Amino acid sequence: MSALPGWVRLAAPVGVGVLIVALWMLWVDVLRTAPRMLPSPIAIGTELGLRWELILGDVLVTGTNAVIGLLAGALLAIVFAGLAAAARPIDGMLAPLVAALAVVPIVALTPILNGMFGASNQFGRQAVAAIAAFVPVFINVLRGLRQTRPVHRDLLRASAATGIQTFRVLTLPTALPYLMTGLRIASSLAVISALVAEYFGGPADGIGTAIATYAKSGRAALSWSFVAGAIALGLLFFLVTSLLERLVTRRAPV
Amino acid sequence: MTPTPEDSAPAVRASGVGKTFAVTRGEVVALTGVELEVRAGEFVSLIGPSGCGKSTLLRLIADLDESSIGTLEVFGKTPRQARLDQDYGIAFQQAGLLPWRDVAANIALPLELHGVDAAGRKARVAELAELVGLTDFVDRYPDQLSGGMQQRVAIARALAERPRLLLMDEPFGALDEMTREYLQGELARIAAETGAAVVFVTHSIPEAVFLSDRVVVMSPRPGRITDVIATGFDGPRGDALRESPEYFAKVTEVREALHGAPVERANER
Image (tube, rainbow over all chains, first blue to last red):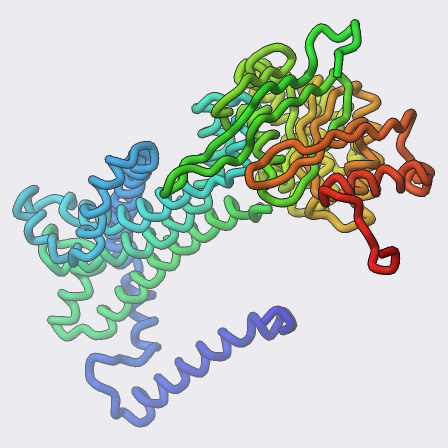
């Protein structure tokens, strides 16, 4: 891969994108054999241009739910991972709970959460995003907190470091890249969960709600332009967390 | 060995020291009946095959493990007190640098842990970088350094608190022969300049003979000291020493001590 010149690495994905759009237009606009719910990319683009304010508003609603869920889930995960790393019994108590959380179809909890906290607020969706984000962050941070190398632990003991100092100069920096990996995985999960949770009720806003509404009423191009908004939101989350991860993992362990 | 009058307490004094590790079935005797005294400023190597307890003995002195039996003193204190007082510096086979800290911050780590202020740390780091010849590399990160340079950073870090005792566990074990010889010369110079006593674990006979005032020969199952050989070399260590007949004689003496009997070559039988 690295042997390819720079322009090829940029041109290759762009070429694939152009090719897909060309085939798509050929199918929809020239052959006219595409299903009715698959409009031409031009129609989707036009809707995107016309209704961008509407789309942006819903992207912000879903995005806010995802951010709140991601932060709350990650924070809880860090606290619980810290407790689990500090004491074996706590780890033993949490392990089956986390395993259960990992296999539960989390978005399917939304109707229950809406029933518990009321369908008129966003809490159910945020809670779903938080639960989805919790698992990868917890698993990665717990692993990261256990990655300190024996030679480093010996060094700090030999330097008469206190427990708090050892945590600050060794355990925490060692775990940080793992936290970032967990956050990167969790960010996509949080967006997907917040969006899909909208299909299960709650307030009448958000991208998921809009896609479902317009698809039902036959406005294919508008639903697809909301899908484009969802993709943009997911990419934004992924890029931001990937960038954070890269900043933190610049220094590979020796 | 009797301490010279000006030394109030020897750097290390071990009497009847033993260490047993509990394993699933019973226990393993890693070290038994160790009698050893290392004078202040003396360079002592521990040499022996794998499992002879040389690293275990070093870890006991460093208070990284606790002895099961016997008394062990470092500058007349318990190893624990000596560790808390930072009477020794330590270097391992792996440099053990923190990859997210640059060379200066790695060297300054012990100073930082003991509350030395930024200006004091900076001055001391400059001195130490000079001492180990890394002045131009203080802002590099460990992954930008060769193995030999990383090991020099580790030695500078071990010297940061001006310890009177330097504990080294095969610090050059993972390096190539040329780097190794160069760093041996450097270490001999640094030990002489700082006046620190050194306890040096190695499995290289030439290395032990070149560096040491005394070579402690150890043997496994159970780990114990079988011989102590004084090299009797005076003055600075250099390439001349490596090529001298006295040096070869001592290498042979240590080798024979390690094998438990004079080594016979087939054509001399």
